[in-house]
Image (cartoon, rainbow, N blue to C red; front, side):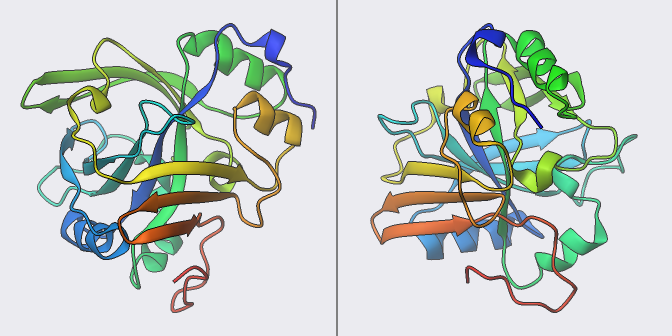
Length: 237
């Protein structure tokens, strides 16, 4: 399947954040502390999705304004009217999170979401529809538009990102430096030209592989593509 050229996209595409799914935010925070030696910061609730999150700054010279999102189903929220994002309603993914939280997806930032989404659709990629979203923070509400599929599935098993366009403040504007940085993001199972368009590398052995550095040394996170059968052990733990 052909990929759109850079000329077909109206604005640069950058890595905005990595998404780690967990059964609960407490489990996600414990994983973050054990993996990177630092606790994530408070995030907020996504009322339309029935989820909540915690976040950790990952910005580097290569990936400015970048962060890690640890996300889980919010047990205090009513069930949403639609399927949750990041496959969080899929039984196989929920089973895969029993041993440990997992990297499941990533989100790419653009300043012209409609044009970028149209370019990817023209190349045959189902990125879903553009949807408005928001969440509260101590500094006020964060607002953005994001591409979401109605079935809640991760395009290309997580290799093809959700696309996001922020309206005003970005989460990293209020995030303290964590000492953890994203050094490289590689994608697998997609056209290398598409990876180039998305400003990341290709040739990963999984849908996505993230290389990070922090106080505890280098860390490699391997994305969960098609969830393994219940009881199978994750490959990167």
